[in-house]
Image 1 (cartoon, rainbow, N blue to C red):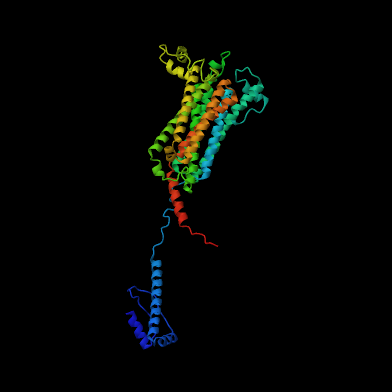
Image 2: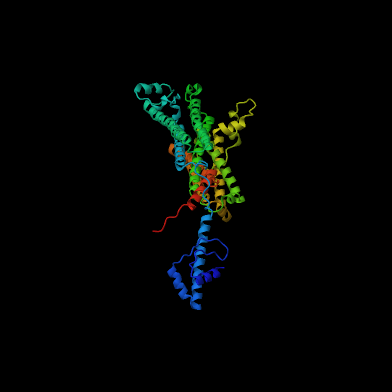
Length: 485
């Protein structure tokens, strides 16, 4: 048909206007020629060779026009590339870096108050303030008369200047506690009202804020145990708070610290993962990695070791509460043997029931010799367990199963365990000097931090972090690429 149209148009001398595609497809190619062009074509077509050549040129032109028209049609009818279906408003709330940094700063303040609290216990400063005044207690005594009022509340044998030094120690401890409340509650209210954090995280952090208030009440309840009349009125008696209340007070501080530190680290790592960072340095599929048997077993052992570290730290509170560190100032022996005699570890005089049925547990928590022995055993077990877990992480199969950041955190935990053991031994050998004892208490918190970091590196990114990572990846893939200059 196409050749027939060409022949008829050439013989008749008429200029064709519309051609159809030989394949039957509709095209919008319109070949228009002027009369002068077609006159030239007729003169060229007088010889057979030139007719064939002209015919080939016209057919090629028509095919090219048809192809361009078809390409244009397909481009117009082609569906648009898939765009990210979710919008930022539809995605779960992802806490930002400022939220994580605020939590880390709050945990640093809790670490500071734990160390200061240990110093107040070692210097007996905690009993220098006999009243709990959350508001008016912010200001210390300012005049001589006010100092004398506080000074006369105690049954003491020290000078006014010595009293001022221990008073300021406890006053600083209490003011720091109030500062933690302000630093934590204020930003929490701001982030919650501005919806910068999800509701689940808001509830969790609100429980930590409540725990801060409960910690203040528990602290006063602990101090009150050292101000009982039976202690204050007994000549030569050493005022001492209850070791049970001291351990509860320290344990709650550990929970506060771990809650702030762990949540802050998780927020920072989730934010980095959402913005393209590898999960704990891992380039493998997260879902498959966390399901590996080696990964699961190592994580369980890390959880068990974290619990052992916490238990050892709490046993140290009983040592401090009973001044048990002043007994048996040698290591690793106790009185020339690995363990004191059984009748000394479980002495009958610590029992209060007539049938002595309570002597077992009372010796564990109230006998200074038994308390120090228990702390030694727990500390040794903690160090051995940390060494074994570190050695396991060095195995070739475990190197492949664990994320790179987990290996780094495990090395930090093992190093901190060595430091903590050294601090504990020297504190014992040198009869519990305040600087070494305070460093030893801070070391327990740092070892807990290292273990918490191991667990954080082994957690999966949160749901919000995974959703935001997918959204931002699609957005980056469909963003217009900058033109080369």
